[in-house]
Amino acid sequence: MKRIERTGYSWNDSEPEMRKSCEPGKIAEKIIELFPRIHDDTDPFRVLICTILSQRTRDENTERACQRLFQYFKNIDEIASADPKDIEPLIVAAGMYRQKAQRIVEVARIIKVKYGGKVPEKLEELLKLPGVGRKTANIVLSVSHKIPAIAVDTHVHRISNRLGWVKTKRPEDTEEALEKIIPERLWKDLNGSMVEFGREVCRPRSPRCGDCPVSKCCEYYRARSSDGSGP
Ligand code: SF4
Image 1 (tube, helix red, strand yellow):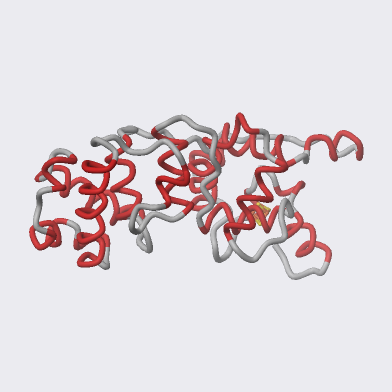
Image 2: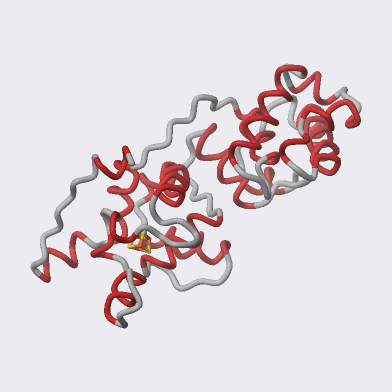
């Protein structure tokens, strides 16, 4: 795979060096460097709506639904005055389309009326919007408003636990724990890069540990190597 081929990192095996190079901040930096995610569209309203559409569906479905939606409804005014029934057929690909159409219209109306058409820049305000949880709110903050925030989705949660950075059951706990160990300057890029890394290498099932550029710093890898079960 393209991204794995251009990794080529060799870690220094000497203990103190190893410990230093395995600090979460250093590993996060490597993952961000090796698995960059470029956001073509950072418009706050579109990012918010597309992230709501992305809930419980795959990226390719989100992209299709998002594209179709904004092809027909160009902006917040058009969505705020739309009948959800007219939105439903455009976002079928994203799944749960009836519920999502309702939410999208509702969110557009609230932002228009309560916030003068501007997507809030405060986490607490974003969390008041229907269908907006911490992950969605943090994505809007980091991608659109360039405010440091760690959006924890299934990839970030899984990989952080595998690497041994955190020992958490819930994404909210992961977010809190990561904020303590990842330098703030890396927060906004962490989600996108972890998603790429999680898709290509540290997959939910059958992670490609043999091709992983950070395997030497990974607890999961070390445990599996020492008990002889893999990788
Ligand atoms: S070594 Fe395996 S489990 Fe650990 S981060 Fe890499 S791919 Fe994921």
